[in-house]
Figure 1 (cartoon, rainbow over the protein chains, first blue to last red):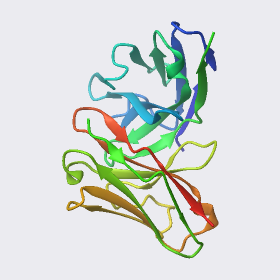
Figure 2 (cartoon, chains in turn green, purple):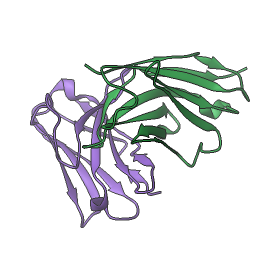
Figure 3 (cartoon, rainbow over the protein chains, first blue to last red):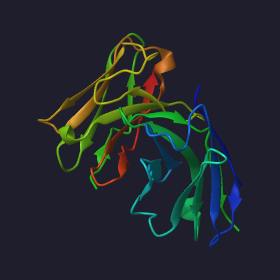
Length: 122
Length: 111
């Protein structure tokens, strides 16, 4: 049974870095049949895909243009987890952040983390 | 990127059938698969339709999906509505240049 467990602070100050972790059980972050995504949700922007990482003999990352200059996804195979870092945050980055697994056969977002509400405020 | 446009809200009575549309602003709706998710308050989305018209195991056959090239849209149809179907529904599709696009979501009220 695949489970994604998110952790990280719920409050970040403007201009600082948002850091979240997604611990994976029941699958491997280096799996050749999965893609690991971060998605956020806010009332103003709805569901917004932020980026993905996946391993196919080497690591690949793709990022949304809207955050490309500020985002990094870092897989950690020793801990079997995925980290999100988003720099220079503003109140517009306030949202519920989700990690989500995608099956690379169906491209279905088939497993999600529980979500983390991150508020950007001083 | 293209935009996926959904109606903000729909409502229907229990036992009836409702259809939620998802219209693609540019490019062909048929060029990339459309997936549909259901989200209840306080929970992450769960898939009800993938690859345009496929149901994951455990999703009732009351849920069905289709695409219509003439209107450049995808549709989610729920028949035999139950109060438990009340939720937000989102379509999503791949833009072909390494990004995923979500629709704005449709709030389904079953009253």
